Length: 125
Image (tube, rainbow, N blue to C red; front, side, top):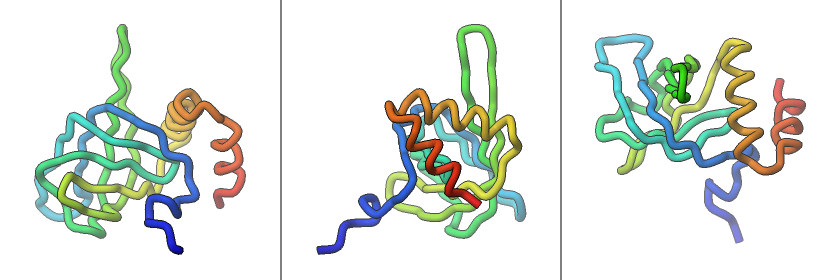
């Protein structure tokens, strides 16, 4: 019996509830602001949103992380991988080392099994 696409994922996903801004890298598409994401991994993020970019749209993902004394935003290059009735999934295509460091820490502290993140990083090209 085949599992669904969610069951076949090989990357670790964790719940992640933050605001995000998606900006198309080409064309005249208006940015999409979402106040809620569902989950995140080293390879992508799912955003709840009313408007959607078409599948295949190259975009910049700005993840807004706010603390008690400062604001931090991660900027990651991505591509819309999937669109459904609730929002869209963006596959990450590139990020700087600072963003990777912060993303890795988000996953470390939310997965409960940081060794899985290390294994995933070691297996990445």
